[in-house]
Length: 109
Length: 113
Image 1 (cartoon, each protein chain N blue to C red):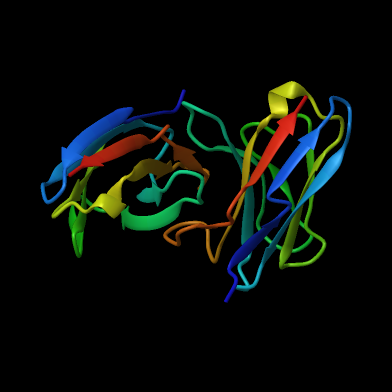
Image 2 (cartoon, each protein chain N blue to C red):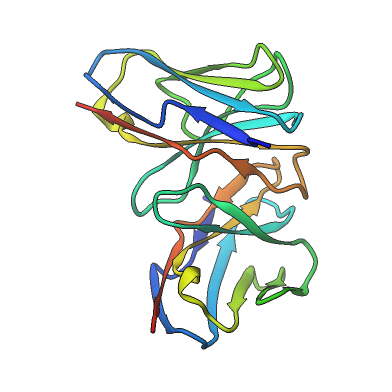
């Protein structure tokens, strides 16, 4: 079967750095997405990786290793508004997104 | 620019009732999707459409039907609602199926009693 694993919950301090990991086992790979979802709201797109390496976008960076089936989302200079769930999703061989359950990130002052 | 609009935002149904969830997008996207989101689980694809007049089954299609008569609209129907269909339903759209991100509506919170 297809599986996306990410931690259920993480806690970090305002101004710090946090890394959210995602491991996957899917039938084929056509890219990996990270989305942010605030409580009660819609998921919004953060990043896309299809090749190995690091993609940087402001305070957020996303890393991919296809050989290891592994990705992480790195959030720097954490702000209170970063408190949200972060969803990892893999585009499989049928070009359907397989979603992880999400990591709830709690930011403390 | 509204993006993806879902109606209604909330609904309570009794077991056995039927209803239709509406999704409209104004981005001229070809691809549209219906997901459900349940606590502790990832989003699960119910049905999707790759263009006007086409629909296809996703991971959890049983108990649902869809139609895409116009490019901008994607309707999700519950034929005979069951308590197991209590969930948050999200509609999404994308320009293409690979590298393009999906844009989501605000969701419909549906409770089946």
